[in-house]
Structure formats: structure tokens, C-alpha cells
Amino acid sequence: MFRHSLMWAVLAVGMAGTAAAETPRATYRWTDPSLMGSKWSAPAPANVSHIIFMNNCAGGCTLHSGYDDSTTNTSSIPNGTANISAYAGSSTQWNQLVQCVQQTYAPFNVQIVTTRPAAGTDYHMAIVAGSASEVGESQGVLGVSPFTCGYIQNSISFTFANEEPSAIMDLCWTVAQETAHSWGLDHKYDDRDPMTYLSSGPSMKTFQNQAGACGEYSSRQCNCTYDQTGSAQENSYQLIMATFGPNAPDTSPPTVAITAPANGASVMAGFPVSANIMDNVGVQTATLKIDGATVTGQSSSGYSWTAPTNLGQGSHHIEVTGVDLAGNAATAAVDVTIGHACTQNSDCTDSSNVCVGGHCVPGPGATGGLGTKCTQNSDCASGQCASDSTGDSYCVVPCSTTMNTCPGGFGCVASGGTDGVCWPGADGGGGCASNGGNGAVLMLLGLGAVLITRRRK
Image 1 (tube, rainbow, N blue to C red):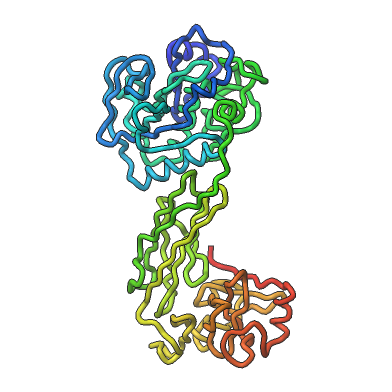
Image 2: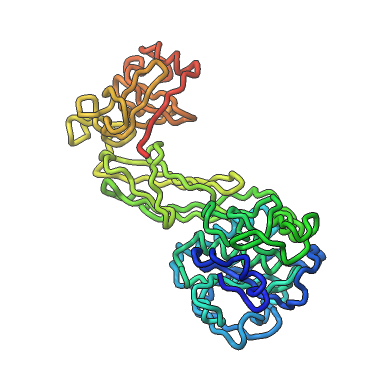
């Protein structure tokens, strides 16, 4: 880490021998070093802005030296006029970074925006762009913020995103730390907290509702005196809560749009699926289902997946569901076709296939086909081996319990909600049914003997 003026001199002894092993992170600069050790107190509500403007400096940003004021692009950090280059990452990476910061601040009454607020509005500006040298910092420093033992109105913090534009979690951590410095939070010796210097602990840092020592690479006294904990410890969660208050309950679901494939498209097996998922606070999970079966393997670079290569010809139903941090969910769906859709077994070009829900799948006569006994997913052409509570295990394919989609000799047995799997002998003589010829299997399932489906990881 690189520090400034008096702060570096104070901390150098405690950091000796350990700093070289760590990646350079972020720092803060005292607006008035004589205030070191002064008492922190929550600002008057009327003076607090609940808006953080994340500025990626599209087209570049120009800042002027002076007292911190986001509304006039004036900052105490550069010694003169500073030209900040635009964020060098992709739009997908930028969206991921914004959502990570939203998730970090989700417990608090803070609004993260990416467009500059209207004139006359107070806000904190978090510049997330450029490199350290553009404001006179040493190469490798990831961020800097003005600092005093209290809230700095209309402050500007810096996260030098172009030092490592694709390191989303690291940049998210830095944005959280630098913004919080502008509200009087010191570094905390806790590798779970965004206020830490320590690269150990979880990659997703969250403000800990737990008092702990201040410090960088070792514990030290805090440079401010905080309510309840004095200068011995800091509780970052409670300090931010005292500044902004709690977030209102989130009742708005995310917006989900499948961007590929298009509805009604003709595709090849192994086709890519991608989606845009946005939320006012942050997205928790994204799930892809094809014909009711969950597909794993989401890309780390966005909401994208690759469909299984063993999907048969015919129509397939694609669903993407996004869930936000409050548990609100939304789903988008499209239908695609591989080859042509089937309505009966004879529509399938491979005589060993059977028609299930509009698409052809390997049937009982095929190796690993529907109804074949199995012990693991890889035994099945569908990649799905299911067991009932009696110990019987068969290769299955998904089906809907509300529609007659299983071939003769198979019934659609519920595996959760309206989702099910085609199970041998559960049809009562043909087609899908909820009871029928194989009473033992259906009775056991009906009494809560759970059908367990095992899927590829």
C-alpha cells in the first residue's frame, strides 16, 4: 500500500516486513492532519446525500484542484488539473462492477447511480476509471479518497480501475473502501471487510457488523475516536448505518431479457444462451432451465451459458430466472427448435428416439436412453439419472406434470412443483399420469418419498 504525508510516517513501523508481500491497494489523504484522533460523529441528516454516482469517465473526466465538491468536479486529491481516462473494461464488466457495489451497500439507505444527478443535487462521486499516475499517485495504487474524522459532503473518491480493469471483485472492494473513507471510516484489520488491506478472506468483502481493530497489515489504534468503540476499534457496518440509515425493503423484481437465442430461432445442439439481468439493488443468482432442467456452467463474464450438446431434435423451452438480493424473482422465456419439432415418435429421424414434449430424445432402445437402469448421470444420454426411495434408478428426461408429454410406458412423476421426469411404468397404460399401473412407485412418491434427480455439475 502507498500512503500520504503524516499518515505514511505513522504507519510505516507497524507495516514493516509485511507490506512487500501484499498487492498495492488504496489509501486516503487527510483534509487536515491536525484532526487526527478527533471524535467521529454521525452527520446531521439534512447534510447527508444518499446518492453515490459511479462515474466511469466515458470520454474522459477533467478535475480541478481545490476543496472537494463533486458538483463542480473539484477535488483535493490532484495538485492541479487532472485528466482521467475512461474505464478500459467492457460494458459487461462495468455492469458487473456496478452490481457488486450495489450488493455491498444493499443494507444501507444508499442509491448507486451511473448517470450524473441533476444540477442542485448533492452526491458523492466515485470515479472508477483512469490510473493512479493521472492524479499524481504512485503506480499500482488502486484508490484514494479525502479523509477526516467525519462525513465530507459532495466528496470525490477515486478507484483507479485501469490499473486492473477486469478484476471486478478487487475493484468493487476498492470502490467500497474509498467511498467509506469519505465518511470517516478508517482501515480495519479484518479480511472480511471492505475497509481491510488484507487480500485473504472472501473475494466479496462485506461491511461487518462487528467491532474490530483498525490497521493495515497489523492491528493498531484507529485514527479517529468512534462512538461506542473509541479509538481501540471500529464497526464499519454501524458507522455507515448511523450515517445513512437502513435500506427500505426491496419489493421490485429484477428485469430479465434473453438476448440469444431469439424466440422461434432454429439452433444447433450446444447453442449459446445469454441474458441481460438488471436490478435496482443487485442480482443474487441467475438460473437457466431448458425443458425444465437446470443447466449449470454459467460464464463468469456475464449471464451466459452453453446448452447441452445432447439435446434432441425438436422444440425446446428456454427459461432464464434472475433473483435479486431480497429474493424477488423474474423469468424470461423463449422457444427454439433443433431440426424440426415432433408430435409422435415417427417424426424422429433416428428410430431409436422417442418424442417427449416436442423434441426427440434417445428412447429405451438406445444406449443410455430413457428408462435405462443407471447409477450415475454419465450412464444416461440425457445426463440425468434419477432414483426413487426404493432404490430404483433410471435414465430420465424432464416433463411437465400438467401436460401429456411422456411416451407410452412412461408417466410424468413430479420432482418439484409442475416439473417432473418421465418415469417407467407410471403411465397407467400410456401417456403422462399422476397415478396408474405402477401403483407402488406412485404411492411411495405420493407419500413424500422424494424422487432425487442428480445432474452434471
